[in-house]
Image 1: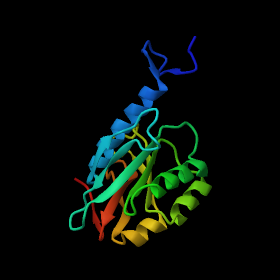
Image 2: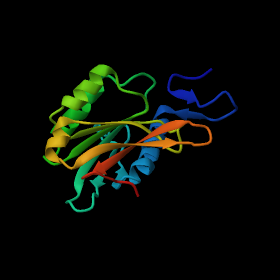
Image 3: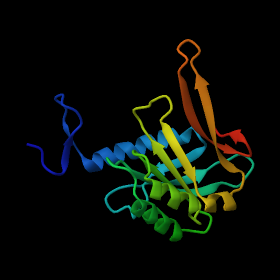
Image 4: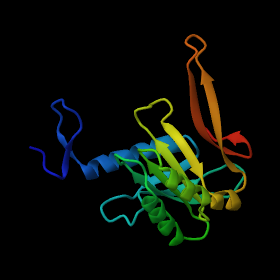
Length: 183
């Protein structure tokens, strides 16, 4: 029988992993994904992390580095507005130029999307799905506060077409002054 603080990763005979360990794995994988977009991050998360799992800087060529904090949510249901407000609160407690990023394993509810888009805080939401190994970023939403503070930052969507199968896939990217930020 599984205890309430343990989770079996699959039905195969695998060791039990705590929710804390699963969260840490998600946070470390997030560092690897965001590194491709000029984010320099280090892990700080733990049981009493104050809502900050990762800290670092966004190293966009041509502008001063942007300090960032990241909160990762490896959840099983849609992201709700309460979690968005939590991150806004963490951003509010930091220095004025700090950018907050909320990374989530699930999509955002309509109310959450609207809250993020209208937020006056510099804020990014990323839905990262690690099962989509080649292009794990499924959605990026940037706030009005981010657009105002850093006007050159935007989102680009690259369409890939497999000419043999006709299959189309979207790849979301961060961009600065219209140029994708991919390393």
